[in-house]
Amino acid sequence: MEVGGMPGRVAFAVTLAVCAMLAAAAVVEPADDPPPTWRGLVVAEEDRCAAYDGDLYPYPASVEDEIVRRLGGIYSPYTCETFDSTRETDIEHIVARSEAHDSGLCAADAETRRRFASDLLNLTLAAPALNRNEKSGKDAAEWSPAENACWFAQVVVDVRRAYDLTIDQREAEALDRLLAGCTSTAIACESSLPPEPVPALPFVERAIDALLGR
Image (cartoon, rainbow, N blue to C red; front, side):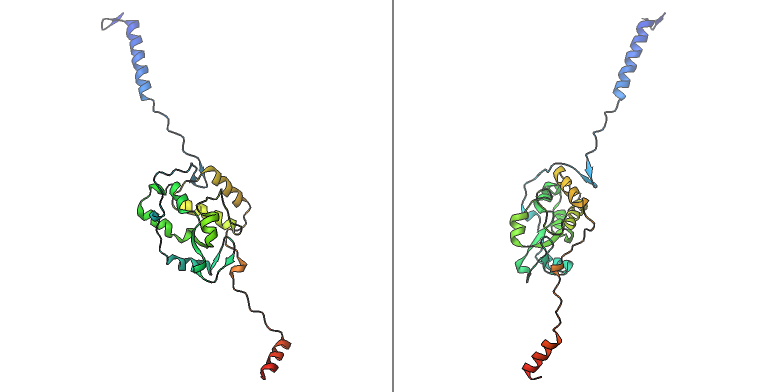
């Protein structure tokens, strides 16, 4: 039997070939696997997609007064060290501006960068030597505070979530270790509270009264 002048077997083979070609063309390429995540954050290597400059992340000096009000005193949660004045402290970004830049904000608009730089969630006080030298732009895999490490770790996670920042594997593992042993992520600094007055003993008061002729 012939179909359209073509032997039946040949026509059947051609039909099969055409069907196979159409089926192959209809196959949809599988989507790439989604990136790994940790606590809602995309895990990825840092990427400086544009040059970093601190001037890209401005914040007003007046924010320091807001930090003091939020803390309830002039002290650093990193060390529980108290200070007589904010002239002795630096405004400290818990997630450093350069670190945030390399974790996604290099592609953000100017308003988002300004908002990040002034966000009280990410601001605290620190001694200048610690802020500028010891911690500087380090991430949580490279540095964590002597005091209130649980608070620090949770803030890092919260800030990264708030600004949709990525996190590299080493920092995620370091934060996991810090948070695993935490029962609280609140700031706890007894030394940040003013000392309670020590009541004078009665005989001391009487001696003072006698000396003063009272």
